[in-house]
Length: 292
Length: 324
Image (cartoon, rainbow over the protein chains, first blue to last red):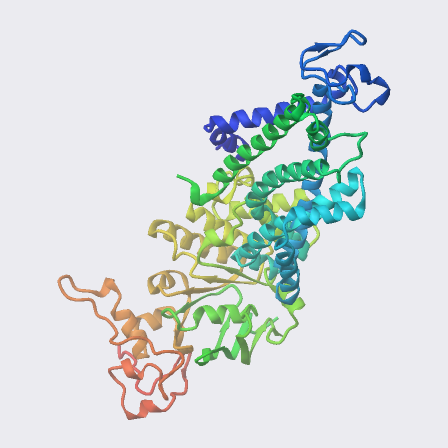
C-alpha cells in the first residue's frame, strides 16, 4: 500500500529547504506566542507592573528596580519590548486565524452554494462579490473598523468582511468545475440529499486551491490587522498588538531609540514572510500545472 | 407478473439547436425481458446513447422526450416527476458509463463513495453498508475487497475502476442496468474478462442488461438479442445468431461485411460507402438510402417495420432469408 496523502505531501514539501525553514519559523513563533505568559519576564498588559523609570532603555538594559534583563529594551511606558512582542504576536495570530477561519467558512459556504444553485442566484451572489472585490480590502476594513469601534471582535468582523470574498470566488470557481463532473451529476440524479452531495462530493475537490488561499489570507489578515492597529483603529491601547507597538515607537525613531519600533516590525515581517513562503510551496505542490 | 420488464414504444427525443431541431431518437420501440441481455449497436450519432439516457429521464433541457412511452414493469416513466425519477434511478434502473475515470470521485475512498449510493436509497448503518459494498465488489471479481475499500480510485487500474462502476450499479439490486460502452476504454484482454464476468453476473443476479456498443464482436459474445440503430431509428432487431448469420437490412449486412475478421489477407477491408447523414438534414425516405447499394425510387418513402417471428426490420429491399 502506498503512503497516506499527508506523508506523501510532506515528502515532497521537505525538498524545498526554504519552505521547511519557514515552516519551522512559523511553528516556533506560534509556540512562543502560545506560551508567552509563562516565559516572558513581564506581563506587558499589567500596567501596575510597569516602571516609568525604566522607560526607553536600550536593549540589554538590566533594571536595578525589578532585576529584569530587557534584551530588546523598553518602550515609552517602561514595557519590556521582548515581552510585548510575544504578547503582540499572540494577539496578531489569534486575530489573523479567527478572521481567516470565519472568512473561510463564510466565503466557502457562499461560493459552493452559488455554484450548486446556478442560475440567477449564482449570478446575484457572484456579481455582488465581484463588486466588493473591486474595492481595496484596506478601505473596506478601515471603514468598518471606524464604524464598529475598537475591540477584538469588531476588528475580526472588519477583517472577515474584507476577506471572505476571496474565499467565495475561489470556492465558486472550483465548485463550478466540479459541479459538471460526471460523478456529481450522477450523485444528483439519485435521491441523495443535496447537502450530502455538496459536502461529500464537491467540497473535498475544492480544498487544494482553498488551502492555498487560506495560507495567504491568514498572512494578509495579520498584516491588515497590524495596519489598522498602526493607524489606531485596531485594538485598545491596553492590549497592544504588533501594529500598535510599531506605532508607539514611531515617535522615538528619530531620537535614536529605534528598538521600540524596529523589533516588533522585524517580528511582523518574519512571521508574514514565513507564512507566505510556506503558502508558496503548498501552492506549487497543489497546482498540477506547475508540477514537473 | 407477466410481460416484458421494459417496454419502449415509439420513443422520440429531440434537441433544439440553432440550426434546427435534431431528432436524435425517432420512434424507437423495443422491449427487454427480465434477466435478458440486449445488445444495442450503431455507429457514433446513431442515437443509441440518447436512447439509454431517455429511458432514465436524463435528457438535459433544452432536449426533451417529445413522444412515446417507456414502461418499466408496467409503470410509465415518461412524464414522471423529477422526484420519482430520482427515486427510480439506481434502485430500479442503473447505468454504467464509458469512462470509469470520470465517474469516480478522485478524493473519496472507494468504499465511502459506493456506500453513498446505498445511503441515497435507504437508511442503513455504516457497517452494514460497508459489508454490502465489500460483498458486491467480490461479486465483480475484485480480490481482497474488504481491504480495498479504503483505497482511492487512482490506486485502481482502468479495468478495476470499471468493475467498481459496475459494482456500484449492482449495489441496489436493480432490475435493469444500462451499460453505455463500458468496455470501450479498456484493453482487449481486460474487456474479455469483464464480458465473461458480466454474463455470469446477469445470469446469477437475474438482472437484465442493455449493452450499448459500436462493437459488434463484443455484443455478439454477450447478448441474446440485438437491436441495430441508424440515424435515430431501429432498423433491425432479432435474436443475435439469426441477425448475425442472416442480416435482413443492408446496413447490418454492411457492418458485418466490414468486420476485419471477414477480410481476406492482401485485399482492402470492405466498407460502407459514404458517411452517416447529418441529423439536421435527413434524407426524405430511408436514411440509409444514399449509402445503400440496393436503393431505388421506392426508398424515397420511409419504410415501415416488417415483422417476421422474433425479427423485425425497416427496409424496402431486405436481403432474402437464407434458403438452407
